[in-house]
Length: 235
Image (tube, rainbow, N blue to C red):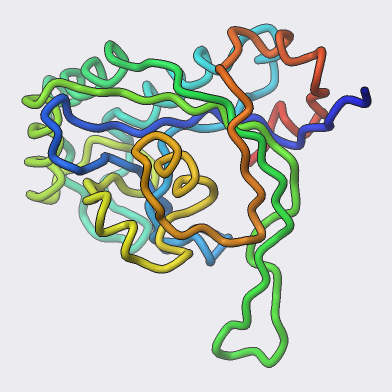
């Protein structure tokens, strides 16, 4: 059987409390994100492999990305040049360790994205607002202690930052389910729906299927898939 060529293979995750409160902690792109269809929409945390990651696996990449993202940044203003108040290093470590210590693999999702076409208010014709690609999203979950979840909530609600890119927020799952098809970005809706048994809307241009367990290393995928060079440096 011919191998499926992959343009990307991100490692992503969602976070929720051991106390079942119907909420999930997600990241997201701020208004400066170039793919405007997803700007300001909640997104799974994580990121893409980089050059040299060929001998690693999805979990290695996820750990690196969370370590880089849940941290004190080196900027004192955000993308709108507003002052940033950073969380104490102690709180950052508590939140980061609470996430990483409780991270578990969930599932791999094969994605065939056709590209989302929309008509901006200032244009007559539709324009493509997302990429055309095939990818595997290796999804992880973290059920963290209630006190760590509430520590994250306290800092978010008081405007203090403990992340370096975009934004982080706590979202009621039922609220996401009641919103429109662009209420979340990329395959966030599909992953949350699969795990929590929800029906969060997702654009029909995203063909997403659960293909089983997350594999340990990227070479474990070689029997069925081929990672193109684009994978090791996707943005």
